[in-house]
Length: 205
Image (cartoon, rainbow, N blue to C red):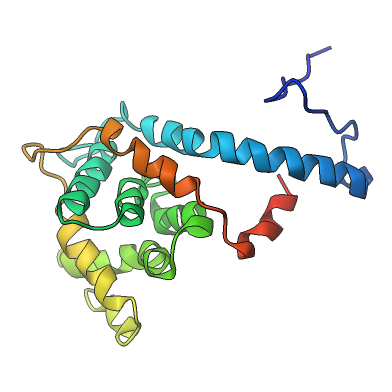
């Protein structure tokens, strides 16, 4: 019989049921108490591991990999004097690019939503559309696609981020900081208390 997965803390307890329908209120209380500690202790490292997994992934045409692109974007944001949240967002903004390219903005937005403000969340969700302006020769592109969002309070920031820190952050000769320089920013981001609207998502696996 396969062994159980080890508990993150030997003092914790397993929920013996194998169907969520059988979990009692007491079971959920135990699970959520343990999950809260687990998330606080491990989430940032798990996110960093996801990002680091792209380090050895080759490029399919760009002169640098997506991993290096994320570092280059974050390096520019840091040197431009932006706050800690924005630096962390920059290094993670394309964390899903290789695995889910068509929806990687939504992926990053969902990952960081409980810990970031509305400005950066909106930017993450919409930066793919704003990139179209900078790819006029892409087949079938609508370079004016972002125009429907004119007047939105976060339009200017999203346009600035894409123009200055994203669409041309692919230069192999540009001085770029290593991942280790950004690990403290990621840890500080995920050390924030999650926003209340995320709590309902914690019920399921």
